[in-house]
Amino acid sequence: MSFASIRIITADLDALVAFYERVTGQQAERPAPVFAQFRGPGATLAIASTDTVAMLNGALVPAANRSVFVEFEVDDVDAAFAALPLEREDVVLEPTTMPWGNRSALVRDPDGNVVNLFRPPVAR
Image (tube, one colour):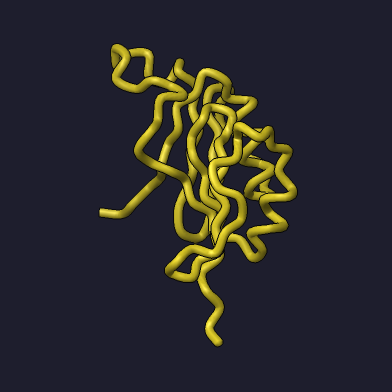
């Protein structure tokens, strides 16, 4: 088995795609009007309209996540955080060095999903 992707279901595809384009610095692949994806060397982040899951009778609800967050390893956490046009309520944790050494900033995407911008400790 091979891991394929994490998919976020949203009622506002364009807003979420624009946010993740800023976070990743990549333009999303848009193979269909209701779907977008960002491919990286380790994983794929897929974003889909609620239209893609209509047949699942409400099993997936946009903007309702409170248990999973999306993580991006970045070269400079402070710069990546500063580059995002965030409202105060979008900031979960300003850039902070965690007790285990990672530098992290946690923010909310337009649907309220938590996104971790992090950098592992640098070997000394």
